[in-house]
Length: 269
Image (cartoon, rainbow, N blue to C red; front, side, top):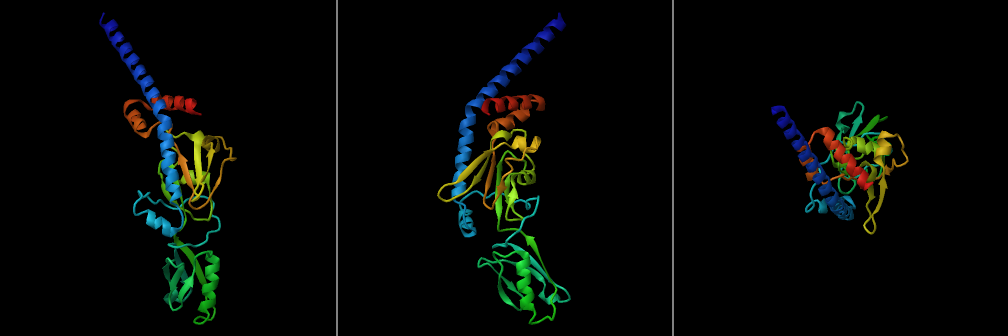
């Protein structure tokens, strides 16, 4: 008799857990559209405010600041220098001409003995050639190297359900979507991989495109591996409101939570 009572209690508990799971799924489904489009609206407003570096500095006074991350990994394309970048200049055998130099708001570096040198819009090689020519007044055959110490002028924004959302400096003028997502730590279990949005901000009319990140990352289909430019925004939405996802992590096992998330994916694809 005791065994039978215990068994009944277990069955009742399981029925209660199943009812709780169903209620959570229904709740998440009803809130999904509101939360998702509200997030898109906020991000589009953020994009409207994007523009020049000066405009960004003004915007940052009132807008929430995104944490700046390490520079993006991946294939490094040609990089043109911009305001805020830091370059290191070495001259062999001439330590007095060496140092780190910040590209100022006017686009110039203040170089030892040579004054202002325009650096904005140049590549490392182009800046190196200019410095060599100017140094010939002081050094017979100058051997110069130029390296970028800090990337601060070009960014992409990776937001939503990735491990490390934030503002990512670019090491090139362009970067692939796949490399950007990898740099952000890959998607979380709650990510809606089949409906990721890439937004190209424009003051008058932002352009956005929906991509299938699941096929790109897990099937090797690279058709949607877009090339990102400075200022682009990548939005990885959640299959469910984030606060409910956090609640699920505390209440349900990883297997049960994965089943719930998979069900939501099917509902909203």
